Length: 178
Ligand code: IMP
Image 1 (cartoon, rainbow, N blue to C red):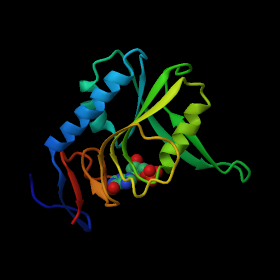
Image 2: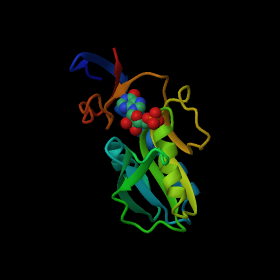
Image 3: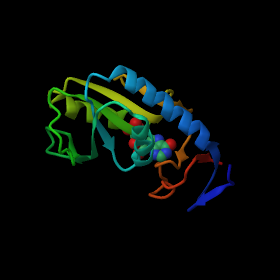
Image 4: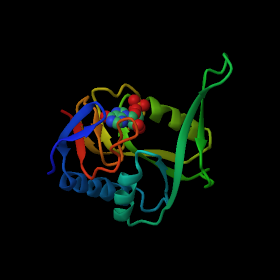
């Protein structure tokens, strides 16, 4: 595995290898292939962070499926409505369908909860969540994360799609703050 990586003011050290990532991807794909084979699921790849995980995962998904790429935008509406969450890029009709949210990392679960709430209003059949990484000690939400590649402690990581201030997404492996 390679050496320290410096991004702006921070140094990161190697943390999760490509081998560990590909084993985790295979484990997640196997479970999805088994659970959803009769569902013709729609994978909703949440950009930007999950592009690398999604590419690897979907090569191992062997069941018929559709794939769509979305972004989650949150903005403050009027005082009474609070924060409004909007999905950008959803072109598929997902009503009545099994949907698999593909995430890079689930930390507190705030992002995931907002996304699930929006999808639930679209009358989907069921919502599953697949994430490359998860920080269970930080996760405080009720919604079940069905497929998790690798659980990590509450450390800040980059690489494999994850960024620090927009940088580091292209790293093949995962690095942690040194
Ligand atoms: P949550 O809403 O707290 O679950 O955070 C989810 C989002 O925060 C992820 O989709 C990432 O964009 C970002 N995030 C959380 N932890 C990390 C990390 O360790 N490195 C890079 N981004 C992170």
